[in-house]
Length: 99
Image 1 (cartoon, rainbow, N blue to C red):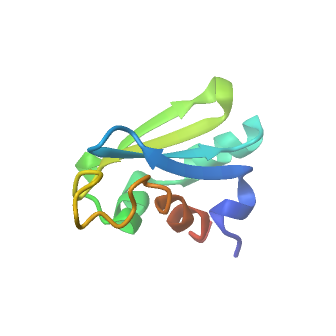
Image 2: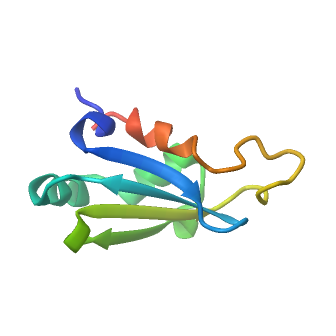
């Protein structure tokens, strides 16, 4: 079985303001984009990120072959308990997901 990170060209995560994190999946081609759109289910992503399904927002940007997920941070950016100030570590979770 392969991983999502091996199937796409790049996955990155970042802050989307102090209260949200965004994960971008750059598919590289229309064929990979369509495959990911059909087979990457929101609930699987929500479970992996440990967020409620209704809090996960999905955006499919076909012109760029990109799928974007946004979700609220558990604690605001910069809080004393924040262990990922830039939100960059979340991409690894999706990258290593079986796909």
